[in-house]
Length: 191
Image 1 (cartoon, rainbow, N blue to C red):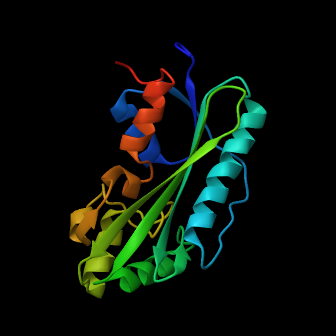
Image 2: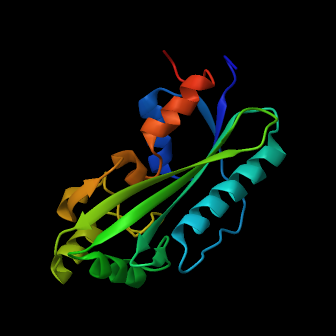
């Protein structure tokens, strides 16, 4: 598959950054799909959305390798996606304050003309106890929209996060360690 450019099926700036950091040559396609949200099933939500995005791109470009992903949070059995408003973003951070949540990223990957295999990666994040002032200060510096749970570990995450376990890039939206294994196998990772 040498010289065959990967299609990244995502609007996420964080996923683009992770692939660029890996040195991957890719083309961006933003899938036009209606994402699903299963209120009490984060894993199902992430897997279905990654598959939907992948299938949309596969219909457009059957001849290319494709990577699509979806990241959601499981907080005490409740699936949390992107905030719909600043008020909802604030409520997410208040809810996470002093507690631990699980970040799931499902990644749908395929070689040309083939169906997707789906990886599911899990990381755990523990938030510091946050005051309303700290939350407002964070949102004054970081746009909370377009990210699962309304925060970004890579953008002043240390002001919110006490600790985490698992893949840091998974928390950003694309588990680089797992994805690079597949990219290497497919000849899409520069040596």
